[in-house]
Length: 171
View 1 (tube, one colour):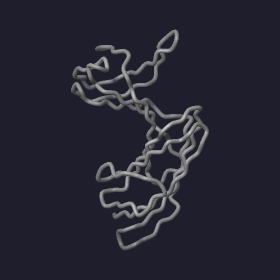
View 2 (cartoon, helix red, strand yellow):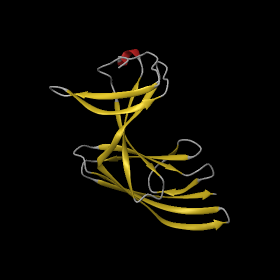
View 3 (cartoon, one colour):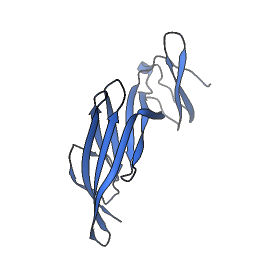
View 4 (cartoon, one colour):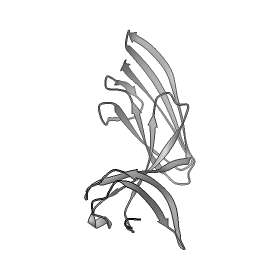
């Protein structure tokens, strides 16, 4: 390895990238951390593979690995560690209506099941395209860029959450 760092403060997140058509999707486990001196880093990081280990009482446990690009100091890093096996997503398109030649209204339902023994938050990111607009949603969302919207859902241990939304998309 080029170098090692320990005692890095991370933020663990769960992310589901919705296509709007997937029946049963996978939830990514993401770790975020700052490449800052106060976080035992703070140096330019070269592009390459980053491996993450977690210390338990006796040894180091391999958590996952991901590739990064060249990263300057004082920037945030996001690494995909793998997929959660105890979070289930059921996503369906429940309706589709043609508005005009190239415009469609589409309705979706997403059900998230937290089978973990801890409370979590999941970011559900949905691609709606540059011409897409949300017509209605049963929960709050935010537009994160020209192509995507983001729903953030807290889910208690062992619970299920369901939401619906409708979009107008052009092709």
